[in-house]
Length: 45
Image (cartoon, rainbow, N blue to C red; front, side, top):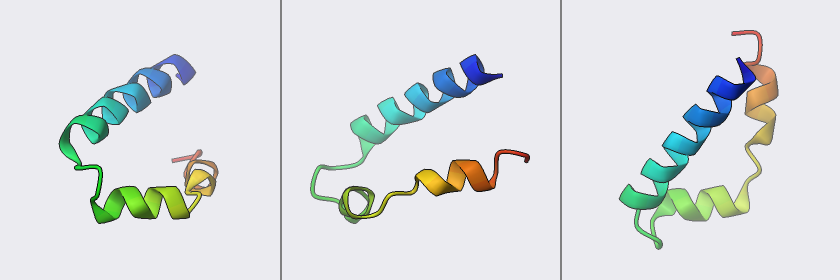
């Protein structure tokens, strides 16, 4: 399951990099806020 998560993360990372402009609000939010806690909160889902 962990390998699947890594592949999925890298896939979405590629999409994120390709589709969201460098000056977009989502990139600024990502740089300002650590959303790492979300994975832990939803790990049993």
